[in-house]
Image (tube, rainbow, N blue to C red; front, side):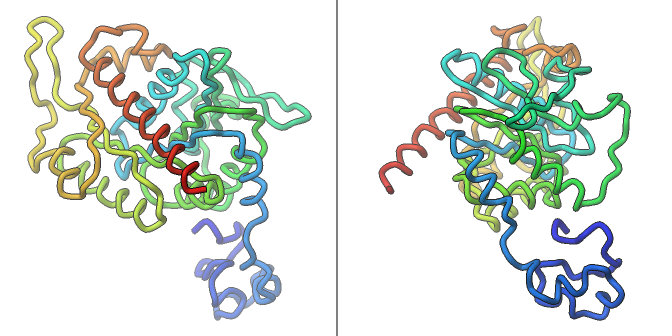
Length: 322
């Protein structure tokens, strides 16, 4: 849990629980007196600080999936690249996958380091209008393992949101790890006062992926996080020579299309498998720039336009509501 201190006993009820400081497992804990006083149930002051810091960010987009290996980071990177292709827009990509930070490699920034300034951490720039932040920039080697419990991950996410000097942004894209645990609870909690636009959910066609993605959708509904739509990655393989499509990962239960119909969610697009996407990521290049005429690039562009339209319409709705 995100509200369990690092030095807490094994069965800690959590600092915000009604049993905090009172349960049998609290006996002997160095935090018992503080928890029993009720002080830990007060809202984290960082929430207001983050709200102030990100008040100059127009649109905040989370990229989520309940399943690992479905292409969240690949999508996040290409969404950021596509949004930044408009030179009038300021875009940032935040990687909160603390244990598996792949964004530095995908964005061609491996070996770069974060610098401290008077206004906070300075993100690393791909282009003049595309900034990136990841724990990968804080490691001495890309092969270093990050072996942290929830509270420490929570603290790092808090620092990324509060202490990075993002400046004024049109879009902040946040790449998350798979699942519905510490990192997701933390990011939703800390962005609670910032008017998040919503989440893009990533899946692949097979039921083993959809099963976990449905859990992610339930998570979004429980925490009242709007869902922009669903993207189905690895949706068939288009032969670059004959242009025929083969189903590598068969949608045995109807794929994302049926899931979206059942759950009344928008299907933003179905991105076909293309080996050149993987190669572009390994080389730290934008697939959209490298192979702009490919079927996958065309689908990406339609998805990105749908995300732009969603954010624009939501901004209009918020303005009208106020």
